[in-house]
Image 1 (cartoon, rainbow, N blue to C red):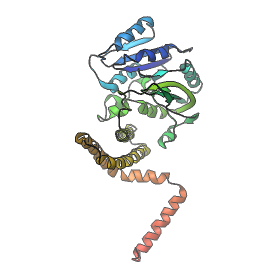
Image 2: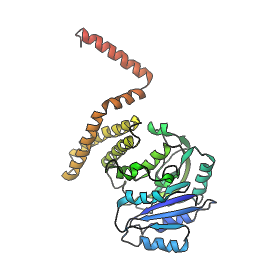
Image 3: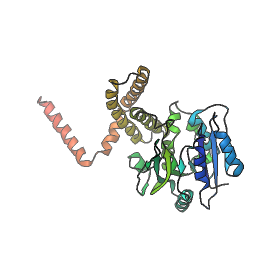
Image 4: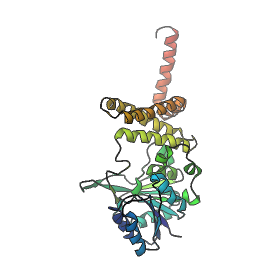
Length: 333
């Protein structure tokens, strides 16, 4: 059994996939690795290119093909289901690593620190004009699940994260197989989900290194969205994670609510500009569903908000309630 599995979910990436694969094969490491390319019925030469690499490195690459286009979620969980190595990561075929010791550094740390489940590095961004800029700027820090619930955890994007395989080694979780609702496909398909379920099982270690490049393309799932659409997706994500963890962590619901409030403000500006009625209706329908949920969960949200307030403000609030009640009884207010 190899030490780490590198998952590469692909669809029509003939222009970039060689650079991604080369950045893996340049690795200098004592740890063994295997690449699983899950191709989602590409119509270009992606498979042909990967097969050329497979012929050159027959023990390093496994190709999972599909006769139909299944979209990202179903494509990536095919790889999760066969990933039994001690560690794993995901590298999209239009991104690439720049540090030939990336695997070595990450696994050296994780081997020595068994209570850590995520190793996080900084990444760069390659813009359409070819310029490369810093994408993240995290400092060295350790984070746990409590930090995550309070929005203080330092976590990485897909190409900057390597995981201890504490989830998929034992098979796919039931909720990933039988999705509670259709929207979970979007919530469970990317790095935010991987980060949440793994930091729930251990700690994350972030370092200052810049060792990978995220390529900005027109086909990017996240980059192609407006800020409003990104906020809607994030609201949906935290709601779905609240239910994924069986409603144990109301902080997730509060995170969703805070993003929802920001989204409402952005919608006011959009209403005067948006000409696409169908798109606007979808946004409004989503907001309506979210609003009903938050109304039903109002007491839970208020309780966790109150819990997070500093003691002096709680005292001010209690004094306010007492004085208001007293003045109200006297008919003054």
